[in-house]
Image (cartoon, rainbow, N blue to C red; front, side, top):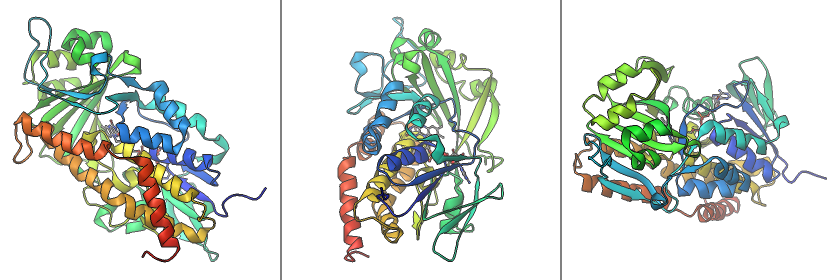
Length: 431
Ligand code: FAD
């Protein structure tokens, strides 16, 4: 049987972006090979949450990705909080005599909070992609072209591999982005947002004892001056995922290393003005913690593609995590790329540049808006956004407006529109 497509695709990077794309392409019979620098797939032991747009995009990519998500997903434990994304709490308040920490306001959406443990999701998702299509230990160094129009990937171990097109899903420090924009371009490197975060997991029973069941068993954001904490249940409610963010005027010491080791005492000192219940919760974290520098692509890439090379996920639009939507946008990218590449008019390598040009035109402004909006909303949570300050009514309005842009989108329609644009491009009626 002759292959459906007379081209092959190389995906560089096997994180959420690369793996969801690989699964989506393979399930559409598009020849694909995944190159990953690590010796195996791996995700950090932390939580991630997905909003309704991401869940729709999973279904477009492959029903199995959605099922993997459902298998490991944890929602708010209280039925009354089914649609709650986060309850927002004044971090300086304390529990009342009946053990309740009051809500300042609540943000809801059609699916509520969907938290999961990254590694558990990955374990499920990898089952959907054949092992023989993955090359581990392949760290992309640079890309050249041979005399026949094939792209040649050069890896750190001295080996090379040929392909018709490369999709860089190689994260925030992407080599593929550097190949597209040039190593000297400001968007070739990520920018420090002057925020960093401590991340940790706490047994649910202990968390309930600290902040009360309502706060621990349902997603909650503790807003304070120049810092905020978010928590949501993962691991089917057995564990509480906690991320504590802090704004600083100091530079991050080493842009090559985006994490450093930290101490619980350091965190407790920085959050010492928070209310007693939150302090009790923080004390449950491990004495040794990892500190994550929050970098993003604050200097936006002028394009997501060049010829038959393109970028997706954090490689294209790494964002700070304040909208909780970076990974969701990776999956949106995968859905659109898979749908475009699967279009029946895309048969040979000659159509691939039009596919990537369409993807760039349809995705770039939404993705780059997220990067900017995420910075803004992070400052809103920390009572420091210009014109918003500590006015909870204004903060609530900002979150509602911006979360609506993220979540209230029809991903199938987004992909269908992109396909129409692709066809216009292929018929020569669009630049
Ligand atoms: P990565 O996960 O970085 O994967 C890149 C892959 O490429 C890696 O496997 C790497 O080994 C490989 N690679 C890199 N360079 C090369 C190379 N040269 N050659 C070969 N392979 C290479 N998003 C949400 O939607 N919801 C959340 O709740 C959320 N919370 C977050 C909390 C924090 C603190 C942070 C920092 C981010 C959060 N995000 C969240 C964002 C989300 O984590 C990212 O957007 C997403 O994980 C990026 O996936 P990716 O596949 O694009 O990149």
